[in-house]
Amino acid sequence: MNPLEKLALKLSLTKAEITLVSALLAFLLLGGILVTLRSSEEADLLVKKAETARYREAEVDSLIALATLQQASVKEDVLQDAEAEGEELAAEKKPEEHRSSGKKVFNGTLSFNKASSQQLQKIPGVGPVMAERLVSFRKSKGGKVLQFQDFLEVKGIGKKKLESLKKYFILE
Image (cartoon, rainbow, N blue to C red; front, top):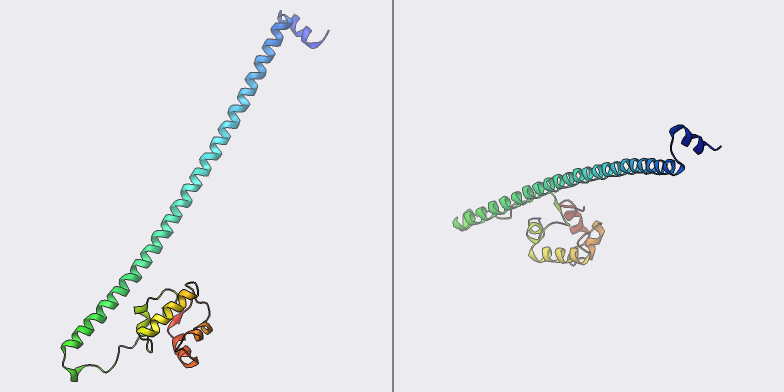
C-alpha cells in the first residue's frame, strides 16, 4: 500500500478526494508565494520612487542656488553699470577743466569665457574694437578659450598686451 492509500483509509476519503484536497493545498501555497513576491516588488518600486524624488529635490535645490548666485552677479553688474553712467553724467555736467583725465582704473578679474563686450571694455587697453575682436575670437573657439597663448591669434594682441590681459582674465 502506498502512502496516499494509507492516508485515504485513515481519513475515510476516496483517492479522488485526496487528490483534489492536495491540488487545492498546492494552489493555496502557490498563491501565498505570489502575494509575497508582489508585495516585495511593490516595496522595491516605492523605495526607487522615494530615491528619485529625493534626487530631484537635490537637483532643484542646486539649480536654485546657481540661479541665486547668477542673480547676485547680474545685480552687481547692473549696479556697476549704473554707477559708471552716473559718473559719466556727472562728468558731462561739470565744466571741461574739472573733468578727470582718464578712465576709472579696473581692479579685479573677469571670466573671459563669460564676459560681455561692455565688461571687456572696462579693462585698461581694451576699447570697443578690441572687445568685439575678443568676443568674436571666443565665438570662433566654440565659446571657450582654454589657454592664454591662444590670444596671440587676435589682431592687435602681442606678447606685451597678452601679459597685461593675463592680470585681468580668468580662463574657466
